Length: 275
Image 1 (spheres, rainbow, N blue to C red):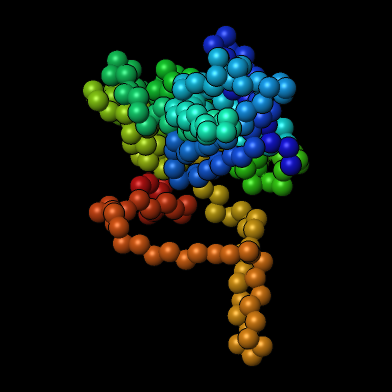
Image 2: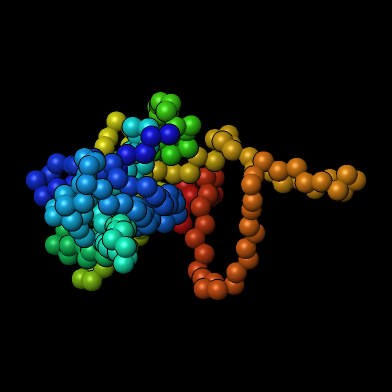
């Protein structure tokens, strides 16, 4: 595969970095602000020279885009920079950041934004406008799943037949007037989408160089894409597995006092499922 790292400059352009030798990327649909980390080694003859990195683009707050085989997997901003040196003159940089949705966790929602008589889609579009995050609703949300789950290097298409059902949920009018002072953007958005029976996450979109906020519902009828197996043959005493290793972890730490349940069936005769 062909990984690509691009770091943004103050003028809005992006510089390809060709001196990174390690990366760690987390893609989690249930979390926002997923961490990413890149290790950049010292070089004086490659395109991304050491002086260029330290003198301009390698800094906290710099935007980044990470691609695999030409498809954007994640983009966001760096917020930690570590310069490692040793007594022999060796040096490398470790840049750590989070995906685009991390801003929504930390930024206060604008109390002046009004949601009066707005649909869910219009409300979220107005809420996320200050963060520069686009809101995607309907069939195009299928593209996000396709990019993150398809074998790399292949194209994907959305499912147009699902558009009408999801549009009906996103077109509901909410009865909230505006965010309260001190509420975070993600907190306000979560309250809106839950009441509409929807789910929000940040994901790459087909044909775009940056991620967007996807507003959609779970597709319970989709076939499984991968199967992980580990079988013990008691008679032969052997283990058949298609994984190199696995971990089963049970923890009782931070057990929530409230439970969020997702469903796709109707509740009663006249009401659609809500949280």
